[in-house]
Image (cartoon, rainbow, N blue to C red):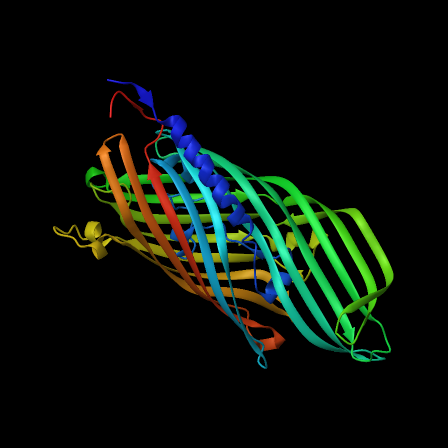
Length: 446
């Protein structure tokens, strides 16, 4: 017999996966929406594929095989070492009542690692986008001396690297905290191209690079009852304080002429700001949620469950940001979702592949807090999803390997045409791979 551990090889494999997908995740900072011109861009919800299929619920959601970074308290419930990685694709159609446009974008969206340090203690770390900026807008303006074509371009956004831990203080009460390091650059360009070429056109190139830290906390309490404690009722809450990033602004105003080939020829610098210290604000928020689920004796996850969330978004805090664009007031988000595995929920004697899929459904409504033309921009929609088992290998009680494919689909509508605003109808597809493994186990022989 030969004694050895597998810890070193598993850590080496994990580090290799992280290097492979970090570059893909960072390159995914793409948004194609005119609404990303406001504030500090489109805010990513911080949810993984299995949550997207359930309306984006999080506060009371805990799963021993999947990571929920929107609720740090859930980390204590992880049963195995877990790797989550995912990507997205989104198709959007825009309509202002006169013109329509259609765009598509996609890329990697998240990478996370979860480790159960003990039966009641878990650790999670990862990388994900936080805000995304991406727009190309063209409009016409009438000036006293000429008409002009005004073009707006934006790109970039802010990412975050995070690490959190949670501990079950006493029976079924978990407390968790997570720290995040934010970093990124927002790039914006505005051009006013004069139709009368006797006048110079004007342009502005703005860049804000910012970094900073923040923390967030959560708690969950679960009450169990019934035969084999199969029924569970969970309540949860989270809090994230206001975040202020230290930023550096470079802002360049200039005039230019356009030659016969349509190229810009710089003429004069109106003014130039280099490395000015500014702040970038992310608003605070807090949420409450509740869930009810039933477990099966042969399943560590719920056979079926239903969950609801309510989140307060203190978007009025964005008014203190150097990067403010638009008018904001406080908003909220309400969501509900459920999941159902037919084989376990109905306790079937025989099963086929489709009976073992985790089917998910949900809906949400969000008051974004953004006010345009005296109307609040809302976001609403419904979701569907599936958790598809790919493989399960169990050589022994301490050698377990599980893989599943999670698909979440969101069909939503943001904004309305009334009042001169843009209505965005979108379909977002999020695909995630979840890998579970029993690590840090010492074998006497294999």
